[in-house]
Length: 218
Image (tube, rainbow, N blue to C red; front, side, top):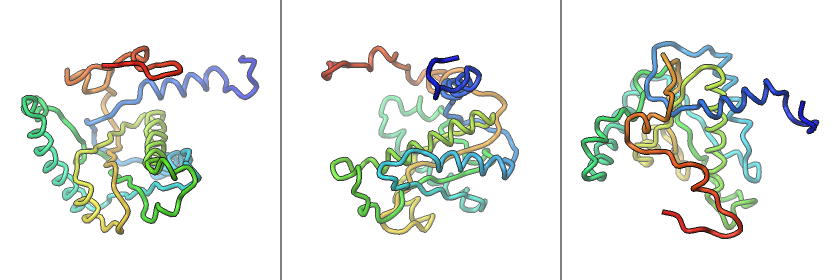
């Protein structure tokens, strides 16, 4: 046992670190609805995320309409082509990547920022983007809880936020930041999918650590 009285037990700690290291941005899903009680646990985990100034700016829209799901898929495909074109010489390579699982996942959510965020000043006066940081923490909580439950989740950011906000009838000032695909999987990627597909390489922590002052990096 750790000498720190607040530390988890070793099995508990092992589970936390396992969820962190085995979490993957999933694109491949198999059919199957998620049980309501598990879904509630996942969303409750998201809702327990840290929030700057306790603003809780996250909003989750559950997509249950097949028509709306298809419309979201179409928006992603539209932006997928725009992204591919913007990548220039890597266009063809990008188009071979699977970038979403919208039509296959058991549950689909859109995570967004609430409207009237200007009223939250605590922690945002000089760093207004902390609202986005807070929502990102909520998404990460959801991701880790899903992995612990044996469920896959994928964060899709390839979409036009203005068009998606209009589709979902979001009020002025609110903004969608993530399409979240959630569901059962046949297996989890052993490494991040973009690494397995040869799109990118992970950088070691040692290259991203600095001390006291900013160090030159590539």
